Amino acid sequence: MNDLIAKASILVEALPFIQKFRKSLVVIKCGGSIMEDPELVKSAMCDVVLLEAIGIRPIVVHGGGKAISAELKRQEIPVRFVNGLRYTDDRTIGIVDDVLHNVVNANLVQLGENAGGKMRGISGKKVLRAERTYSTDPVTGKSEDIGFVGKVSGVDISPILEALEANTIPVVTPLGTGADGQIYNINADTAASEIAKALRARKLVFVSDVPGVLRDREDENSVIPTIRTDEIAKLSADGILSGGMLPKVQSCAEALNAGINKVHLIDGRLHHSLLLEIFTEDGVGTQIIRPDSIL
Image (cartoon, rainbow, N blue to C red; front, side, top):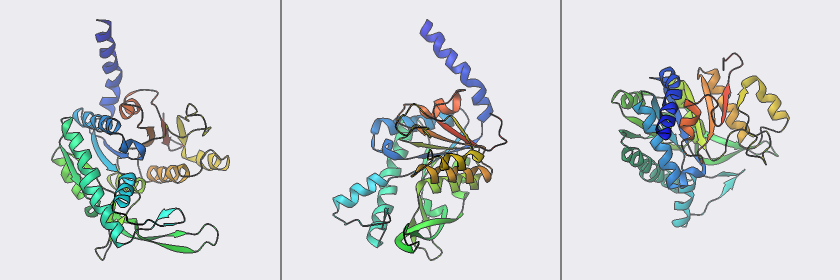
């Protein structure tokens, strides 16, 4: 009986959050090594289905870098890097297109349906308008070609809204289409941020394989629970924000400036971290907010 009462208490604790976020748009970006762990990705998609079932309107945007790398290796397609970024030629963009849609997206849709959700896979090619981008050499400052890698120049949210109106959960690939019809690979974090901004989503959640922003990168227990955007510069100067985390947090700040209420960075290696972050007072990751936000 005590176990049953404890379960009921959890539901009661979640009630104010369920009421607060009901009908809210929440963009969830899934990436990192959790995409390679069947149990973790299954758990994440189960959480997404639960969010929809209680009245929240989730939109999933996913990565797929490791699956793409595995397929390139299987087909013995040589990979070359420019300033640490994979060069995407004609053959590679074909592999990226195929794997993201027919492997990664299809798997997420199937897992959501297995959990009882109504899912709709949506190609980013129908949502994201893109233009070619270049890499800057850190030493010479020279722009270098990295192939069919793009930046977002516009977002057509109509396919996503149609899916939501049909009471389905959109699952979007991070690809874009240029004005000439060329397909471009888009950074999945960027794709999620741009989609969230265009939708004016209430929340943007990054689910990956890190617990949040760490004050000490060697200590996973040193998660910073809350970062205000006016603290980012100092955290960068102090070396706390560095490497790939700095541009991620900067893109979070841009999303907040565009109207997103809160951005969350959470660890998908923790089962049900998405639910714990949204439906508990303390949360489990790092939330990024504007200076004037009320906690």
